[in-house]
Image (cartoon, rainbow, N blue to C red; front, side, top):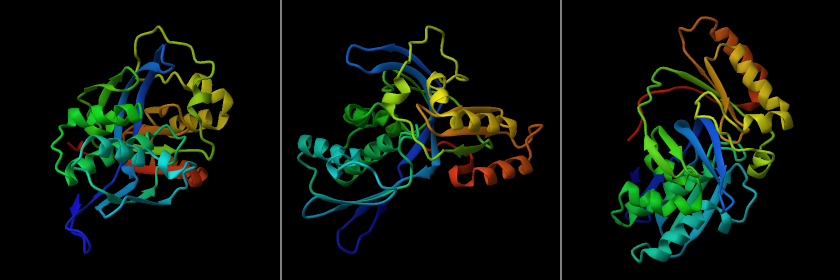
Length: 281
């Protein structure tokens, strides 16, 4: 969204959203240390960060909200700016105001989304004229999930998450409840003991659950409780620690009372209770 500013001719405000995974298969370990995956990325627009980018006389970065344990120069927003400004001479200095709402260590891709939306902002503000395909290529080196957030519609992902095929997925009217325990899961921890899965991709199975649940029993318990409350599908997202449940309002065994009791029990952990609408293009 473009917005008139009292100081500059124009500035841009974006809302980098998170994602969930419907199924996740670890295919193989690559020579470069990464892993090839198969998964379905689904954007969740209702949980998002806040990013404002304004033309300025010198670069600055201000952050509020959830504290991120890294120096500003290591933030993917800043890395995206440095990378693109070094490549495109049209890009001038900017002031970045950023509010972090998506928790990290949650399997939601918040940092990747921030970087992708920063690239979108720079493309618009400085008239670079880059297509979505070109923007996806620009941000792919910043993080495995970054390219997905350029398209921001349901996609089947392969490779390290950068080979994307949009899919027809209708979740309109489906209710999603997302719960994240206080503890997070590091990527290193999630991959510890992980073995490649030779089976075909199954959107019902997240391979990381086998390694993460024994280390963090609360995550497996949350999944069980979501299913007990009437979810027709529940899974950990990515490498965790967020768990989500999908509910149909007319499903047998799913009542507002069940969900209300669940949300009250995990009140401090509930990230989102929302209903899917149309996908944004």
